[in-house]
Length: 191
Image (tube, rainbow, N blue to C red; front, side, top):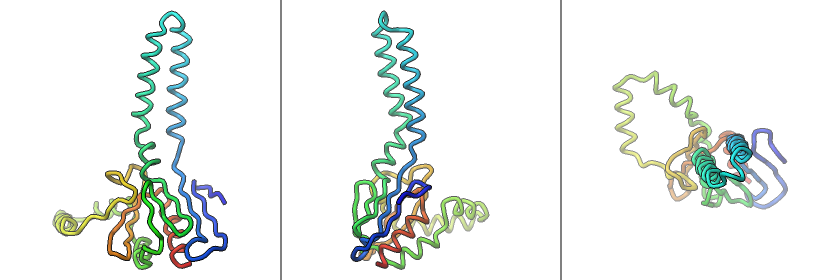
């Protein structure tokens, strides 16, 4: 079944955690818009320059291709590192796959309680300098969670969820649909 928010959820009968299917689709509007604008630009230049100035047109074509890659570096990175699938009792984020049963139920419950990035930033604004210094000191002493799927940090426009495995490893998952992901993980973990 398809969701209107860009994700799919289904629940056919299957053994432990395999009944839950979740797929988070990433937004494509920016990539389509930049491809259309650059495509129109290249076609317009072709109508002016070809066939006499084909060398200049090939330079414009090459420059437009590089510009398209630069403008779409973040969406391409999101597609490689942050695409989320949950099926057959396995969670796949980017290029990494783990069994859902390796996630602790307590950490999934705690993840629901975690503030969103916007709520966290709003709470920081209301803190005093002393409180912020103490938070910075405590956060420096704790081990940072590993970003699941790879990448350097959570991409712009995505929220983060921190869960823990049965081995005690903290994993950070970047997502566009925080509640839907946590709901699917919780249902898969309880089946």
